[in-house]
Length: 375
Image 1 (cartoon, rainbow, N blue to C red):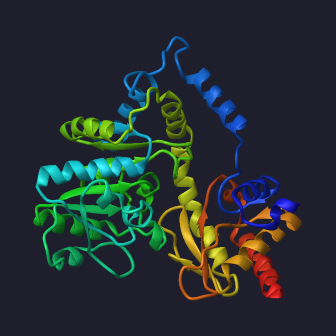
Image 2 (spheres, rainbow, N blue to C red; image 1 turned 30 degrees about the horizontal axis):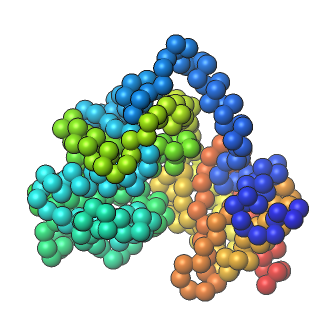
Image 3 (spheres, rainbow, N blue to C red; image 1 turned 60 degrees about the vertical axis):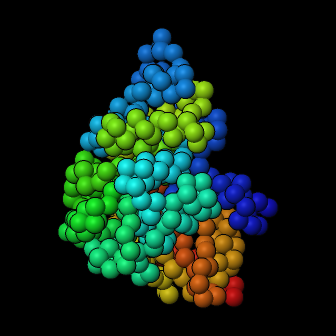
């Protein structure tokens, strides 16, 4: 299989599809397969006489926004093509309401890590990092900020530190500390859907702590695109204007909305099962020689796994392992710090549910043996 020679995207997708078993992630679907699945959903759930939306008004878009607001317990919700745009708009709205362009934020939050400084370049806002340590922003971090800020940007879970979540009491204390400073609170809830198990609270109780929330339809739920900004009716009314200014108002949005509705109906109910099985997968990985799992007990269905080997070697051997054994374990190895120490993100989904901890330990152990032999 020549396409297993490197970690290009097409090669990786083909390698995963060729495997009999998958530990991390899902079996990739082709465009034709995704269209067939969406068509089947539409024929079952959509009125055959329904017309497409126009600029996001009516049809599947209106149903999606109403469904999202109901799930989150907010007065309204607004569809966006991307989370980056949705959060830019949220922060612009809060800046106008508070009169402050300063945003208290974690230095590894999405806007500072993956958006090319859009929060400053496009929105004219000034990020104020509130912590340098591992884990979430705390009440103590807010209390010692050193200068005022108008909005607290809070990411649940914090992906770059291992998809970590605070305890419920820690979250309440952090929210109260921000309120004590008269700050608006925005929740980056891209992966909020899968965070309820950890808190033992429903979506509405979590969202009620914040003034606005962004949720993704494509990260945990697996749709091809789409995000929503949810909050009070006045905020969402203003967000309509900013979405238009940012270019987020395509002529028709029904394909994106329809796939998001399918994800809410079909994938959302399964996320709790994935979260419940994640500790089993993590327990198997902790038995792999040299492995570090973080957090040791996952907070969601995603977590980090670290190995003391170069990322390039882990990637190459991972393809070889997949080709010879028909098993895909994990990809996307990254070497962010000291040379030779790499990590990947493990995602527990449907394919992982059939794995026991013993099977995980044995298969990943065989992979690490192969890595060591290749050094």
